[in-house]
Amino acid sequence: MTFRWSRWSPQLALVPAVVVTLTAFIGAIFWTIYLSLTRSRRLPEYEIDWSEWGRQYERLFKDDAWAISLKNLITLGIGSALAIVFGFILAAMIDKERRGESIFRTVFLYPLAISLIVTGAAWRWIFNPEFGLEHFLHSIGLTWVNASWLATGETAMWAIILASVWQSSGFYMALMLAGLKSINSEIWSAARLDGVSLWRLYLEIIIPMMKFTFVTCAILLSLGVIKAYDVIVAMTNGGPGQSTYVPAYFTIQALSAKGNLGYASAAAVMMLAITAVIFLPLVLLTAWQQKRRGRATT
Image 1 (cartoon, one colour):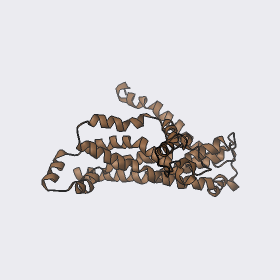
Image 2 (image 1 turned 60 degrees about the horizontal axis):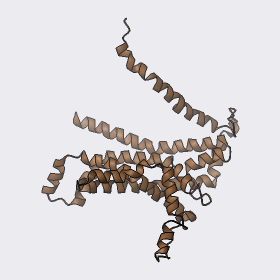
Image 3 (image 1 turned 120 degrees about the horizontal axis):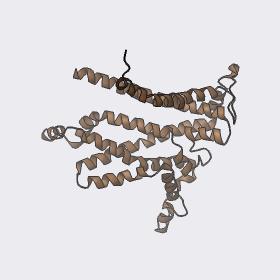
Image 4 (image 1 turned 90 degrees about the horizontal axis):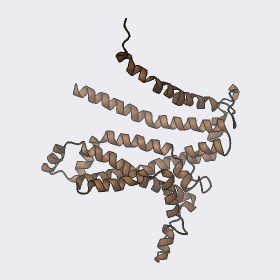
């Protein structure tokens, strides 16, 4: 039996990637799960008290800050979904008006080139009552306007959502624009000949045809929401009080401020569980749709 490099070289080339994946990703996940069952503080401890193996999780779900962070995660997810809506509207407008398409695309994509730390710092300045938007509006006589949203817990989360939507709308616009351009031009012509209104055309034909693009946007948006940390640090640092805590910020605080590795690991494991709950249905739906499409074409 002769050894053929041409046959085995692709598999050998994948070995470093497989080793890194098993060690850095899957290995780190199991290590975090293991630490969440221990009493680890600043340094890891590897002895598990099986009579209290769920101690960290019990503490976690009795912690009011964790409950606030879960509530804020839902609020941030729902609010940030506006970025997909705005992205689709911008993409539809640009697709219909071809003149200046590249200029508008560049302008709307520009916020994506800015990191969330810089975005958060800029929006913190805008919401500053001493020299931001409120100061400007008051100087022109609109003294009734209150734009210091970061000062109160009731409005601080909405200010973060506004900054996140502004930063990411251009990205979803680019994805939606690519989806719109993939639609056969004959569909637009046939709808125009049949006298279908623009609203019905988008709602009943275009949007259903772009469902995979919307699913992709939803997955990317969910990823961004679950790992939201830098914009929180830049704009509110979790405050006022604990009103803008999210799971990622809570986990880092448990590790850095409280020095509790086991507690932070339990929070990180719960973030992984939330990610699985969100993504598994989307992944299974996508796989089922592709399988169904494959059967239809054969």
